[in-house]
Length: 278
Image (spheres, rainbow, N blue to C red):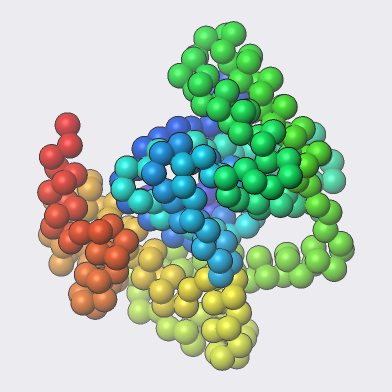
């Protein structure tokens, strides 16, 4: 089951999570984790939302997502993704001032200063992904530390105390609300409920949420419902109406449009496509 606070699991032989996977139109609603994440597109495309900005990544584009930075992703059809996640405790150990730094979230085809130094490391790491031998894992670990050194030398910026306090305040508000939605998304949730939870006036809450989440509160709730419905569609034989009722999505017209916008086909077509896979 998808959770808003992603628990990042590391490779037993590596101090990080390293994965290469192919996905078909996957939607991951806004979420956060303590790890630093790097997304590098090998094939296809991905939309990455951070705050109210959507960045389109194509093959050989990458994006840095900082610890506790709320973000969401939506892949195009048949997208191959290179994913790195550096656990917080690893970063804190090697960068003692880590709580007061951020890495610039540059994206694009390596046209910014310093970015060309990262692409060869990504490419070498991806070439070692399937190598589970001792030598391969040692080479991969060496590249990992080299990558971290490049990030520190070319991408690191320091936060002032005021910026840190403001960032923490906004994050604490949103993360508490996201946790609440994850546990109550099957219920009827209103803007008034959400604003009251944060002790904010409704109009201010709407502006605040849209600024830091890139969507309205109800759009966010529906995206969480949609992800749960999609997961159950692929794993169970429940009918679509049973799934909508189970996950609190009671407006079929809104659901149908949202599903087609995200996955490029109807729920029936998507389920049929999934069932045909070997």
